[in-house]
Image 1 (cartoon, rainbow, N blue to C red):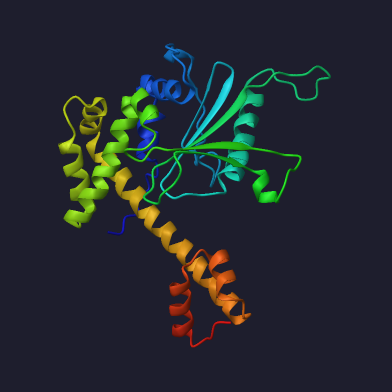
Image 2: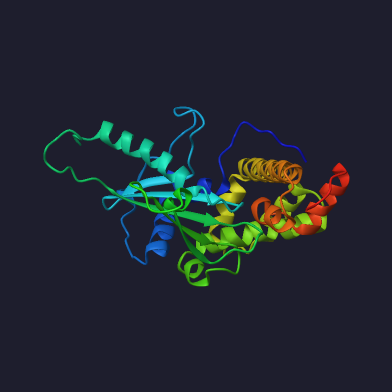
Length: 279
């Protein structure tokens, strides 16, 4: 199913970055940070919107307790999240400076909100429950700029302590997992989404919200899954291009596999299709 709706928001953002669901944002904040904060009015959303910053749009960001929290949801593992976080943070701090009396040219140290970057991974590929990503890994060593991102695997059945502390997150993870399971059986994504929402237990907190906004939620899921498919195709095409170049340069099979992330059998098949030999 090819879908190209203009609405590009993610369901994750719709649930946890929505001012109408401040208590859900706070519940996830508490679960991630091991806290019990209860004042939802202190959440100040500052999510970047594409309409203002072309090509730059994050999932959820907000100020609370003199901290800047940056949340991203990803269904495809991406080691470049620290660099993306650096770009997002630069915009968010620029907005902060413009809206406060922060004066960067002062001789007196100007206090600023402490950044905390979290990536919620909910893809099908196997990943650790928790992983710390560093921008310096892209430099091949320490540099004068560092960004740290905590990746949390929220696939249903993972990070049980985290999902137990935030039932809304657990319900969302269940929904995504059920849609994937239904899609395999029903061969139709739209039908799979409908069936998963209807299958949710009535005591699920997010069910009523999803039913009230069913059309919007379906559009988001359809768009998100379509984008995931396109991204996967692009990644595979890049890998094939790299592999072809290395085959032409007579790189050994083990080196090609390590760099391209393709299996040795896949590389052999590609070489045979291209009429090329492997060193």
